[in-house]
Image (cartoon, rainbow, N blue to C red):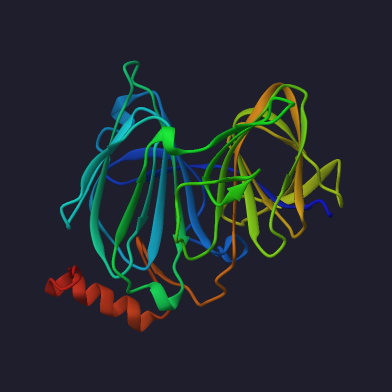
Length: 301
C-alpha cells in the first residue's frame, strides 16, 4: 500500500452565486483536469438568512450531475419536469441533468437561522450527456453510518466502504462520497482506489494529512492558480486537499478531532466545453444547447 501524497492544499474563496447566495468555493470554473470527473465544489454555510434566502432560482443544467448534501437547515427544490421536494439535515440529492432540465433550489435555515450544505458537480461522459434526467433523493436514515473500533465514523453516501454500500447507484464516474469523522488525536488509514482522482474537504476540526513526499509543508496554488506559496501542512476548517496517486489516505486528527468529506471518482478524460451550468464536449454542442434554450426545445420529456 502507498500513501497518497498531497498535490495541492486549497483555501476556499468567497463567491456569490444564484440570486445572491454567499458561499465558499473550493474549485470550479477553471482548469479542473486534476479533479476530473468533478467540476465544482461549493460549501454553502451561513448563519445570516439575508445571505442565502434568495437562493438559486430557475436555471438550466445539461451534461452534468449535481450532488447536494445538507447538514443543517433545508433546501426546497423543484424542476421543469414536475419534481418537487425538500432536503433536510443529513439528506442527499444526486441529480443527473442529462440532456436538459430547468431546476431551482431555495435554502431555508434551521430554527436558529443556520444553513449548511455542500454542492458538488460531476461531469458526464459524452455517451451519457444527452441521457434522460433523473433524481436520486436519499433521506438521512438511508445512508449507512459505520463506526470503527477507534471511534472513527463514516457515512457512506455513494460507493462501497468498510463493507457498506451507499444508496446512490448507477453513477457514471463510479464515485465514492464519504463523510468521515475521526476523534481527537486519532490516526486513520482510508483506502482509495488507485485509479481514481481524490480530494478531501475539511469542514470541522483540524488535522494532518500525511504527505510522504513533503511531510512538513507543501507548495500550493490558490483557488485561481495565480500564485505559488508555502502553506502549513495542518488542514483546518474550509481546507480542500487534492491528493496525488496512491492506495490510501492517512489522516491524523487534531485535539478537537476532524470531520471531512473524502470524494473520489474515475477520470472521464474527455474534452470539456463549459458555459455556466451547461457542460458539453465541444463548442458546437454548447451553441446547440444555447439555441435550444432560446427556441424552447431545451427540455424534452
